[in-house]
Length: 237
Image 1 (cartoon, rainbow, N blue to C red):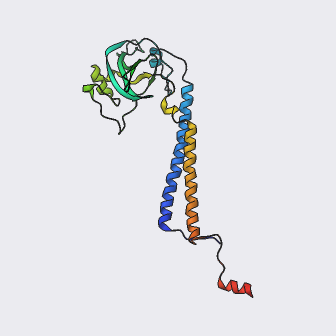
Image 2 (tube, one colour):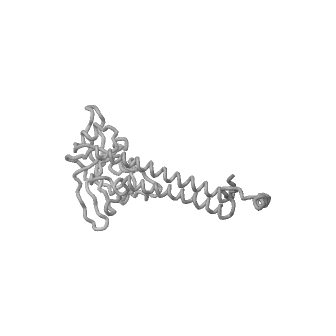
Image 3 (tube, one colour):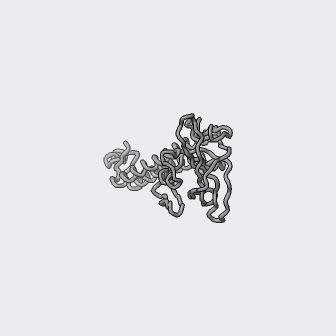
């Protein structure tokens, strides 16, 4: 009969670590599936359309089709910090959004019209966009400074006030430059998430192996019961 006398503290630590490793592996598998769905949605987003069609026929898909067309803009722009190949400033201008209904109130849309490279100072004009929901601020986002026109997170109310419009008139989406597949999808494709998941699962198996080996080395785990002295004498007779 196997004999197992676990070390209490080591067992508690191992179970907690094992649960964490399995959770990390499962989370990476979920990320892999999510990323694959996002990539499929990107591939299926369709052909280029105009702003009216993009804003008035949104179907709730993850990515809008590429958007092209003339952009009537005001003269003022907001400088929004972002990362592409390098760090830089998105130049956000205000556009009168096309009305989807005849009696609809006037709405506005933030549109990226240029990207200013923070390192070189070069500015590239934008002629192709995608409609998406602005990213939410995180705990690591720097504070916005409207006085110096430096924005690090999307703040609809403050941005609307900077343009002198009613915040309720600003659409909850914006038009960002369509520069190809988003870096959030290209930097870490699904295959990488699978590799990460296998790594976490492999560490979980290794932890189990070390745990069992340690108990074997200390005599706390035996696959069979050692023979008693009486049994030895009986075999000797």
